[in-house]
Image 1 (tube, rainbow, N blue to C red):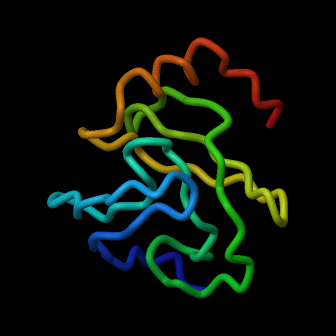
Image 2 (cartoon, rainbow, N blue to C red; image 1 turned 90 degrees about the vertical axis):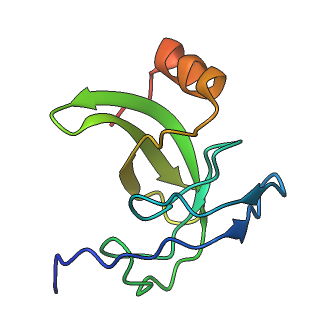
Length: 105
């Protein structure tokens, strides 16, 4: 299995909140900037190889050498995924997750 990062930065409509989400412009867009949810489509970033397609809900924020990362749990399969916080993510949502930050991984 390849650990290669496949760049996919395209506009989409969030399946959770219905927001129109524009391309990010500097790396791949992985999640909704409004509700921070994503879809479990990838095994490795951008490969679209996952058969799950469950909703990845944000459950916390981690600070590490890559900067702030959102931590997601899939509603369907329970897998934990992480993705870097985007520059245009709704800041209030990040603050709420940071304050809560109890995700039990």
